[in-house]
Length: 200
Image 1 (cartoon, rainbow, N blue to C red):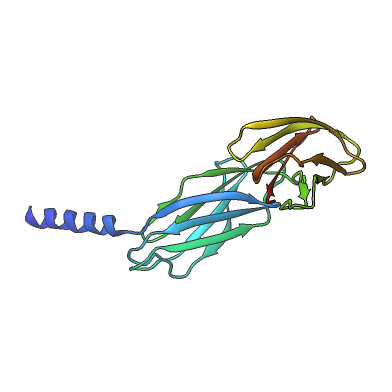
Image 2: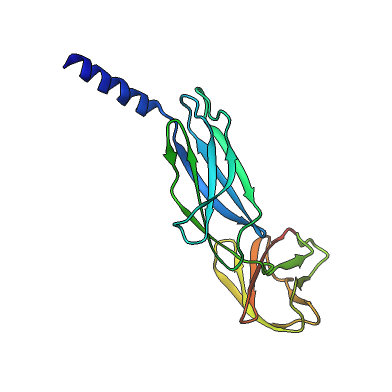
């Protein structure tokens, strides 16, 4: 009985010190998916694998590191970029380590192949010599835009109804005091936002 109890305690102590997958995260990085996670410190594991799925059930291996992973004294940060994600649908990811076996939670990421709408405000920062802020909208031209100017605390200060000439318009900033501002505009299909600083 004593031997069985000691064996159970020994196995339990090994399991407590075993490596784990923590902070598993998958995120859109352009048209790819970035994957990051941590292997906690502990006895070295014998490799890790990253999987991809389109239905969260049937996973395909996209990366395999069969070598020794982890460290007895420090956590190990792992990064991987998956450039073969499927566009305009959900992609699912998980990671596994071996010896001891551990599986991460499954993370869902929606990947689009459409360029993210962008807006540029210039000059930034706005200094003494400028009373007008230029606004350039990328991938959109000759459209009506409505929106708001917010201060750094999210309080709306102004409402705008603008029309671009090609992809450029402007807003008056002569009466704004020093600080951080956010310009948010929409054409009814896409939203655009940009931060700018007044430093007079």
